[in-house]
Image (tube, rainbow, N blue to C red; front, side, top):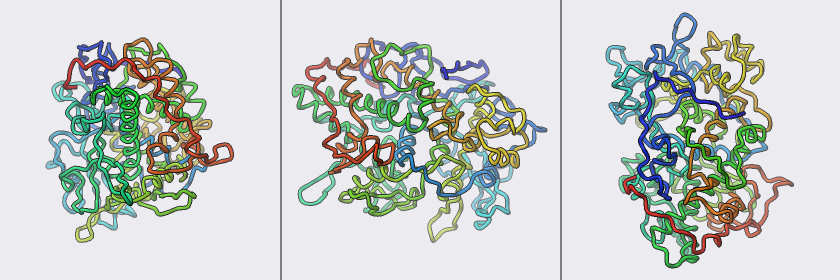
Length: 611
């Protein structure tokens, strides 16, 4: 499956290309500028997503799409969610929960969307105080609320017929032209760990310690004289996280979801510890290096390890051998494959569908596992209680890491844990309301005007379905029947909904079209980035010995090293413990060898310090 040619539509609003003013810089900018020398603004934080088809708006500009049958309204996103999706625990015994959490971590690194600038901070502003749809004449332009039937089995208990939805921010030039709108990506699309290092120089300065090459951490007592590093906290916890308890934690991080999802806080802590550990080792090997030199080289090595873990461990588990080989995603050597004519922008189709695809793999409870692999306790996937304080309890980080690498993932299908599709929110002393996150995800796809499922099928080389039965090459009869009962035409099927109905392809977790779109995205992120780990021919490129050291390091090694005192782990942490993937001592895993960096050439200063 080769990388498909993106069509550049003149009627689509795009961000203008800027000339790279520092092509010789050996230090990767924080906002993504100059990662691609020819298209220096592609993938930069604050620029637009990229489309693979014309924007799907009923007026060609911004109004959400309608059915191809009589231009009638599409079924409500909640009606689709309630009719086609469901709640059920169905585990995948061949994959660990780390697959889902790592995919979420990576997707947060690639894309983030915000509400339109004129929208208030209150996310419920598009419904009235009683959970009802606002009258059309007073409904703000930034609102596109989701209608809920009065007979809805879940929402009727709250007398709620409206689910608020604020439309996503669009590029300013889209407001001034008649072109189809395009939404803004707040993150760099490149795999640069912007969730750890920030997406701008200003944001990064809040996260750096400016000593020893370290990122900021906070030392927490852990029995006796031991004090262990955890993420720093913000001063205004109530404003940032909505918490006021001294026992809760609101972390200072470039990824706001770290304060909402326990598993993400675990991975964030791991990568910060990885960076600081590398900086400490580099300081020993090169004692004359300054804080700045230690920091930038530790960042460069950490990002390269992240590339290796993502392409050589995580994606093969998620997508399977056929897709990985078809897109040539894995890498084992230095390469001249960097392609400046390719775009690394995050695809709208990826941004709008990765959340529900990941959500299908998540359980309602996250297990904390002890060294003997027995369950210590469980924490809720989502809860009004902030669980980050639990992470800092003695031994809890290790238990959380064992949980991610031991607990099975949910199977990829149309079923979700109940908390994602029918969640009750609101303090006990206030009026309760319901939330359906998957319906919001479907509405996001419509807001972004992304491809239909049929569009994506055709893009990935399948025949365009003329009837619902035309979907039989990717899904079973039951799934086809479900779609036919809700949509008037196969041309109407929302992309995320279609992807969730697909049967797994080959030995991967996802279906054919889902694997194709993710494969396309990650191929572009690798080939269009001159700072990717195995790119050769630049002053900043790793030597062969340095790359070999990175490739010899397993993610399991990093988990052991970043843990407090974990003793055993399986080599492939994306797969469960088994006779072919047994628990082994952490000391038996190959350690990261930094000897190739002794007296290595130091990175040069960036030309533009503001980026």
